[in-house]
Length: 538
Image (cartoon, rainbow, N blue to C red):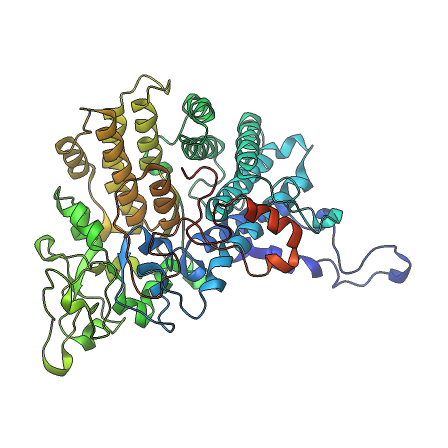
């Protein structure tokens, strides 16, 4: 992967040689032209920045993972950064974490936009431009769903002296994203050169990029079911007609490359000593999985070796993954010895180990260390299972997304969700035989529209959460209302005792772009707060 990130040295490329009469050349020596480097590598830079935004300590694992009760933690207080996600209580760097998605999302979009600018009008590069446009939309989609109104129409135009971009209404951002995506997907041409420097497991395959793009269109469209049902239906049907992801082999993810310094950030976080000990699967998720004897339980969960010393040692990756022994940690408890101490939680199982080596949370399941702390683990962006679940919902709503029934889409999704874990390695693999049998034993409830929507979106939450795409699990929960979650009400929380609906804009925006920031905030009922709802969040 190292060669892919050559863009970091662009400012000095071409300046190491010696040219006669150099001073007489009317060229800014701090710049270099596209002719002197291959800007196609900006595609990988865009992908990497997007991934950095949705993984690790840049937000999602510290916020959304607990907000939608995929993870839980007993940490509390200003020094314990997982209090952000489990109890909505600020840590020392909460505002910094909250702004990172904005910064990294725009870094990803900026690289994609630069690639588009350099190659627009070049017929041979149409597929590169289309892939870059998809990445630009993906980054913008992530940013607007975190914050609300954002710069889009005037964003990324610093070179044109647009230093104070307007905040577009989220409704307009969505319309523009769908239009841009539609144009890019229509422009793909398999007879032209494929994109290089692709970090997804597509190797620039145009057919797979189109399926990914149409699946992204479907995801964006379904966000609008409550805000603009007509547009949601229009673009969901367009996406289905264009062709979405069709197998697990087309899942979009990027594996870490730790040897060259590009590790999986989720795995790095979970392998950090404090995180390794404190982060557990939430009781909400674990109870959901165990209620249907989901085979994923033994793949993703384990109890640490007994005793505090073993549980706190990130080098000790041995654990008990017996299905019957797995137990989720309830959200909102701590280790402070007071009323909210975990020992007071209903059904508290006691400690593992004994005496000075007793571990008070040792009988709660952590993410299985051999899988989730591997620094080369996959970081998921969008999967076949997700697209099939969204198609199942569209079908339940009566939309024209093809002849396949909602029940078949749902079964495809459930089986695929289990099989997608194989990307973590052989120890995480669930065979197609086992996955298909589980899907057959747990068919879609079609007794009513409400029953179907509940089942589809609960599965979407579990699937995205297990694959550690926490932002997507949270966004779809906001959209659908499933699963029904009980918020944590903990002293000192920053959201008024409700599950946060957005992140705060970066603290730099009120001074860097004050007038437009105020306009963006004015669209939020309640202002720039954690509990304010954005346009599509009905």
